[in-house]
Length: 77
Image (cartoon, rainbow, N blue to C red; front, top):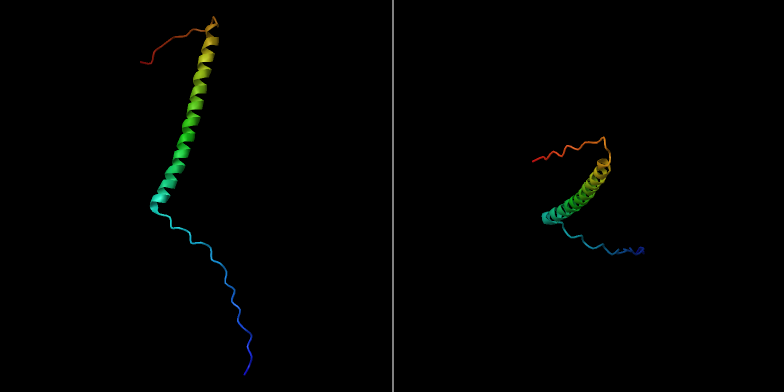
């Protein structure tokens, strides 16, 4: 008989199976991202609005000392 070389099979450990992603998980991730963007926009809006109000009030005090400046004081209501 002919002598054959043995067949060597190397078994590699398989990576763990990734869990399936449900539609609810995708929706929760999307809403989380939208929530972060919404909070960032709200924060920037409050900061810019506060800055504009602070600037207007500060500028109004300096304009009052100018004798050539006339303020009309018109109410928007």
